[in-house]
Length: 108
Image (cartoon, rainbow, N blue to C red; front, side, top):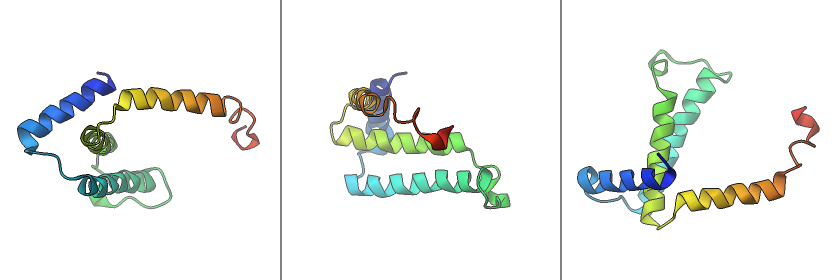
């Protein structure tokens, strides 16, 4: 599955099951909530916070997938081709950072 295909799948799902997209501000709030759930798992499972019993069965993959779903929703409703945007982003990062990280003494 490529990014364009994933965006189309989400669009079809919204039309069939979701009735319509939430407005952009609502989706931004939902995205923030979903990213918070990812942060909670990572901080407790991989960071220094202790993991609560109620969090031990949380699926990081599922939470990351929730983030992607909302990102695809926002892209769809704002007419963004994420596949094109992502490819352009990689070109920009490569031009800007092609030596930056290799020269970073903190990463050695």
